[in-house]
Image (cartoon, rainbow, N blue to C red):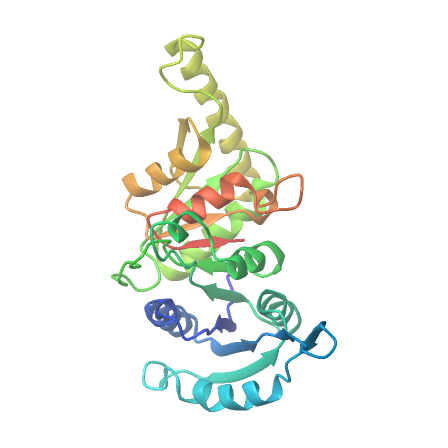
Length: 286
């Protein structure tokens, strides 16, 4: 059974903080979880007129100014929850990931910052680093200028991405247990990459054979994990085709595996990046 006792919600007082708050409320309420609101004061510097080198700005006055602001934020919205409010100093992404890893956090919930025609193309650097570094599952909101309103209590349909390897088993198990806990329908989706259905190199019988082979692998994984759910196997670019399937099946939560989140250089992998950025609903990276 999925256990979520402590949820971390980093607060930066942006508009996305407030549009994400209803989702945090729904998740914390559903799991009767303790909520931690964390705000981080970054360590800043400025050029010194005397030495020409950068001098650190004393962060304590900034922290003292921030503490009452954090104390008053979202009081009404979270009045029925057990809430802890924490102000820390340091690099925001490093502080958030370290807090999640060392303070018994079961789920971190963050917006992705899709503001403006250019920033819409990028994940916020803090969110990307937290998704990369934090060991606990990380929930991210829809990456749009105006995130969708919350229509359902946590989730009604969960769509989980599978790569068809044994590494998928823990992701499959987590998604199944989460869906069971919140009473949601579950569907698995596997994308066969690098091929287009219209490719002349791969006639229809060949494509159907590849799909049947993939179905067999997913069925074996389900038997091993003791999980059973409808499965879609589609062909094309992984991020785009997976998000199309999530949209077609009216997903209100997507689950992807942390094991495939990073590329060979340790950065957020292209497929994970595309799914988080284009998914029609929130994403939990496990």
